[in-house]
Image 1 (spheres, rainbow, N blue to C red):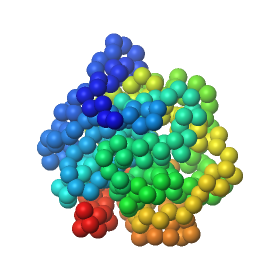
Image 2: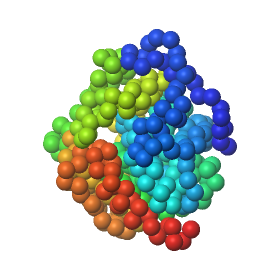
Image 3: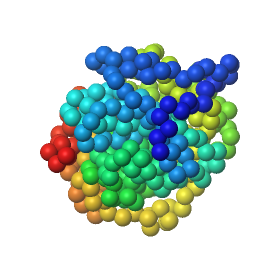
Length: 327
């Protein structure tokens, strides 16, 4: 059930995470930063299993679900939402568990990717749809791959932005060059407690650093919205717990769970990614037999949807066009 107007918990103040609690900003604080003027967004909370997911929603038509990555939240899709609406789609962009205004279980075991994928299957159902067009970036891409594997009945088409298929990522992490890119994955975030004590220092410098490759840079006003999201009680730990759960999973068990993805799939890849090598973009055909193509954007960073939004939006709208004719 969607709890609609249920008030979320008050966040800690921006910056160090200390100070008097203040309410989260209203949607106007976000829509005023989105291109093309203010946008009519609906906000709600979906009770899915044992978690409550916060989401924003707009439009009518075939359902597109947008899954953000680390260290973003639903607002990471600010440059995609309005163009998708204009093209005739209904958009739902959640905060995945652990982020911003969604539930934040304390134990890292609650952030296993199968649980994250089950959340999205439940969200699609809760929003009254049988299936959806699924888009995921970074960790949202990892979740999207897993939804398509574990719950193929709810994924009509799959679009992945700078997120390696699980098999390709596992293979890549055997190479020193990728291990160097993924140092934070194993040697920092996996450490108990330490990251939470560090990440809020210097006005959340550590999290902000991950966004520094974006071109154009994130504006101060946009960064304020991110800091507000990171400052939500428990959010820093929840975000880091994705990595803790991942590195503690047996690679043999993870490989045994892989199965071919039946949904037509588009991969969009920013070639200037500092965190993932470009060789990880292409999934094995056996794993993704209905791969439409891998579209490589030579001048885009890991934040491809931010760097080249017009091209990304065009690719998504064209790839999802068959759903509009069938709707």
